[in-house]
Amino acid sequence: MLRMVFLVVALTIAPLGSQAQKVLEVEFSAGGCCPTCEADIVGALDVKGVKTCSWDQHNQRATVVFKPSKVSLDDLQRLVSLTGHDTDLYIASDEAYGELTDCCKYRGENGAGHKHEE
Image 1 (cartoon, rainbow, N blue to C red):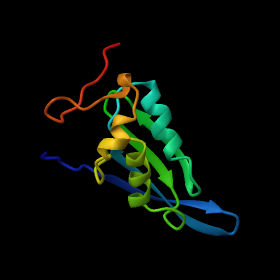
Image 2: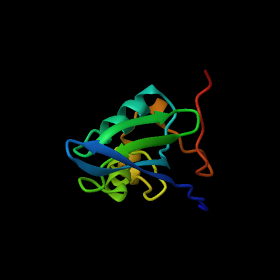
Image 3: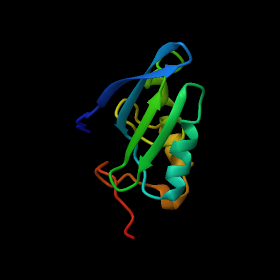
Image 4: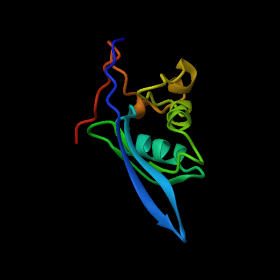
């Protein structure tokens, strides 16, 4: 499967006390199709070092603000994939994907995925 990776990284500085710590905002693909997928993806990103996260169901994109000194972008995407949701860096295992409820099956016949209609 040919995948184009679009990764947007914006570096911001967030003052914390008398020191400034780096905080990154990243966006990456996170396959899914419904509010249950959102709960899985956002839940997977509820780890030390993540300040905020959100998931856009229609574009299948996660946006995460995090401290790279606490958690890496690689780790974030790996954690999402462990819940059965493909990311730019990781394809969820067939076992993890298979454990998703039927409404969460976002992969199409050609691996292109699909989106629920509202």
